[in-house]
Structures are given as structure tokens and as C-alpha cells.
Length: 103
Image (cartoon, rainbow, N blue to C red; front, side, top):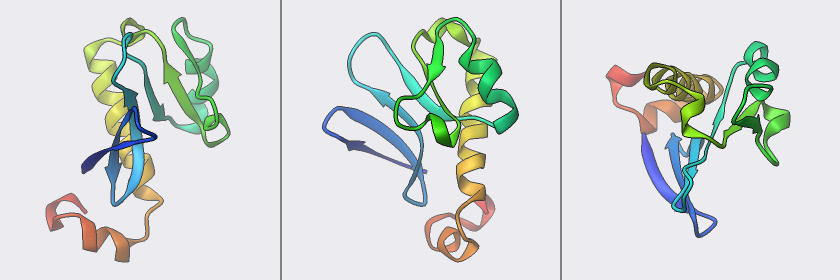
């Protein structure tokens, strides 16, 4: 996993160069992440969560209120986003970017 600043004001977390989580530096805390197809509609309808602008067609949500998730849910959805993005990356590229125990 790596992190970097994109678009001047967004902290992006990446796996093999592909973004799986985005947050800004400004308050309030807002986070965008990828979710499973079956969860997208349900989560998008939850208080404090909307389909992510520009990314909703790829099943990304924008969590506008940190309290929308419990700590355990945050851990689950961030980990799930990582795995969903990682699963789309070809093995050849993953081998270059990840330690063997993360493959």
C-alpha cells in the first residue's frame, strides 16, 4: 500500500498505483471508497453516505459523515475496498508492487 496527494487536496491510498480510498485534508472528514455491487444501493441510501461524484458508476460511495460507520464497519469497508481494487490488478503488476505475503 502507498499513499500520495492527488488533485492538490486529496490524500489517496493505493495498491499497485490504483486508488482504493480517498480523503481530503479539510474538515469535515469525508472518505470515498469502492464497495461491492450488492452493497452499493443500500449504503448509498444510508444517512451520511451518497454515491461518490464521478465514481458512482464504478460502485464508489462518499461517506460525508464519519459517524455513518462504526469503527468495525470502517475497518471492514476500507479493507474490502482494498481487496476489490487489488482483485482487478493483473498478477504480473501485483508481483512488482507488493511483498509476497500480500499477494
